[in-house]
Length: 362
Figure (cartoon, rainbow, N blue to C red):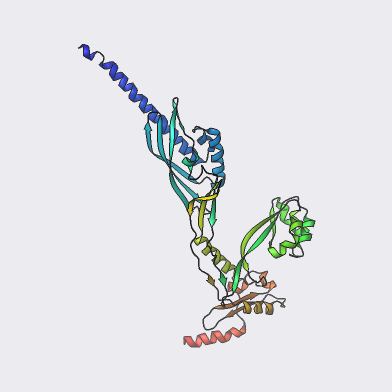
C-alpha cells in the first residue's frame, strides 16, 4: 500500500502540467487569431500590439494599408508549438482594382514566443507580406507593350496616345488671371465661367490641354495659387481637326481591350531599386483597324463647317456597308451625336439606295 500513497500527488501534478500546456496553447491561438483579425480590419495598432516591436510594426502596417488598401483577408494555419516558442503559417489574399478582380494570394511563415503568461509574435515584416522587409510595397497596373494602335482604313494612325494636362483650380483662385491665360486656347472659358464651376466650393478641372497648348503658358499657370497641373496619358485623334462622333466609340473599344489585357505588379521599394514581389504580366493586344478614312473624314467636316444649321454627313461604302466618314458641324455637336442616333432620316440621295434594296428584296 505504501507504494500507492504518492500516486494521487503524481496524478495531480500530471493534471496541472497538462492544464498548463492547454492554457499556453489557448493563449497562443488567441494571440494568433487576434493578430489575423486585426490585420483583416486594417487595424495596424491592434495588430502591432500583439508583436514584439509595437512601434516598428505600427509604422510598417500603416504604410502597407496606405499603399495597398484594406481589402485583404488573413488566415492562420499550421500552428506548431514547442514549449515557449511556436511557428505558424499565414495565408493572405489582397484584392485590387475598381472591380476588385485582381487577387494577390500568398503564404508566409511566422514565429511567436512566450512572454510571461502571454504570447508575442516576433515582428518580421516578411511575415505579413513578401518583400515588406526589404521596403515599402506599392501596387500598379501594367499596360500592354506595345500599346494597340487605332488605324484608319489605309493603315494610317487615327488615334494615338498623347500626354495631356488637367488644369485643376480650387476655391480662392484668381479666376481673372487664369481665364486670361486659358481663353486664347479655349474661348468658352471666362472669369465668370470659372467662378460658376467653383460655386459649389470644391476643386474642379477647368480644362484639359494638349502639350503644345500648355507649353507657352505652363510657367504662368503653375505660378498661380490654387492651380494644380496634372499630366495624364490619353488617346486622342492624331489630327486635332478630326472631331467625328465615331471616335468616342473607337476610344472606348481601345480602352476595353487595353484594360482586358493589362497586367499588374506589387513592387517593393528596396535600397537597390524597385523589386517586383507579385503580379502578372500584361498580355499582347492587337491593333484596331477602323473603316474610317482620314482624308474623307476631313473633307466631310470641311463641307459641313460653313453651315449654320445642324448638319451631319455619313459616308458609307455601298458594297460593304462600312462607314468611311461620320461628320457633324458645330451646331449639330451641341445636340449630341445626331449622326449616330438614328433619329433623323437620310437625305433624298439615299432614296436610290432604299429603292435598290427594295428591288433586290423582290
